[in-house]
Length: 179
Image (cartoon, rainbow, N blue to C red; front, side, top):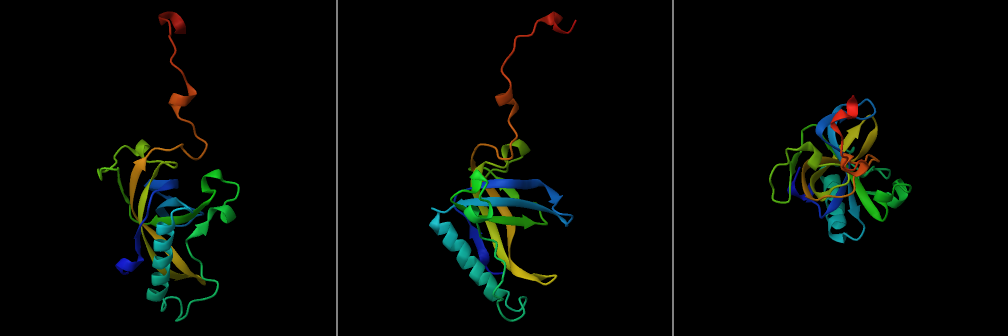
């Protein structure tokens, strides 16, 4: 794998963030994963990803059977087409990246994030990913390998779960309340 298949993205939004514990999806091997949402306006990141995918095709030609199939699966997807009912993916592209190894997760100052509640689906940041060819069970394509993540700012949590601070307000409780 060359440096030409590695991409450090611009700022996007993290969704389906499974970066603290490997999880099994559809009964497969447990992996760390994230869906990274890229605004369509971020032309520089989209171009870098498309270039890396083309390089991964060239580097993986032997794995793909010596030629690039017309139905080759690629990891860059259009949120307006593939997730039309999900507001978070509107006017965006996305890539699903995964890894057997735990990704590094840092903050804007490149300090490791240790509090798992600090990095969540809905926060914004950048991703370090690599693209490579695969050929498994008759499926051929380019995959996106998760390397590292950098959180840059908070965002509205995705997934429908509210924060406790938003659900409740301070309450004065009298001492004999439970008597």
